[in-house]
Image (tube, rainbow over all chains, first blue to last red; front, side):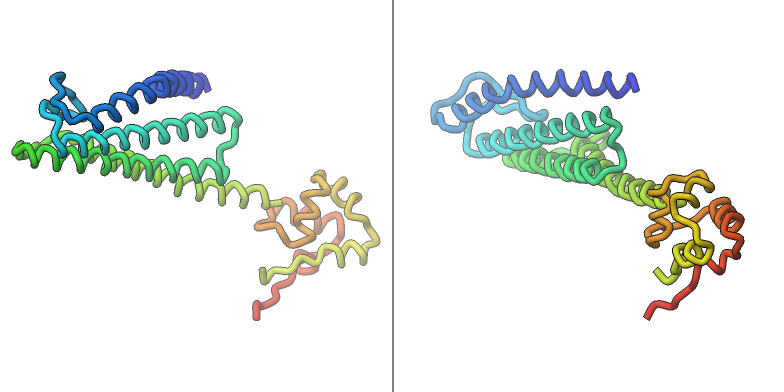
Length: 167
Length: 69
């Protein structure tokens, strides 16, 4: 179980760091969305470089921030899930619910962060074909993997109940 | 479920209490209660063998198939 404690420690650390950065990020993004003056410092988000702060950039920025908050919620649920694992609660409705929710959040995160970034690139005229490892596909696959895990745990719970009711 | 457990009928016939049967079988009264109330999903052959041995009966005396209507 040492691996579980190690994973929990890493997730807790990332969670705390992310939580500290959220207010600053929200204030900064809020400021960027409100101002109408040109912002000289280039912003890099999800592989897109924003140099001109026009309406398209603001929309993309809004959705990327939203996706970051979704990711944070997912991280929080993973934290809760690991806590239940530590308490040896494994084949439980809560675990199934968390796996499902995390999976859906990752899929949503993939769409919310990927689609605006794609449209922003199109709006900037940066149309190119990329063949290879795509983070969008990775995120969708990860989300689906979590939902599949929820199904597997559901089956596990049924088997556990059956085993408990075998005399 | 179409399988009915008639364990309490057999226990009454043999004038034996559930506690005694559970004790002789080496299982908890809670588990025996699950079996008696028909909540059990499965029964091991070893458990069935023990019940038949202690109550001196056949598996058919304990269980009955009733078709669902």
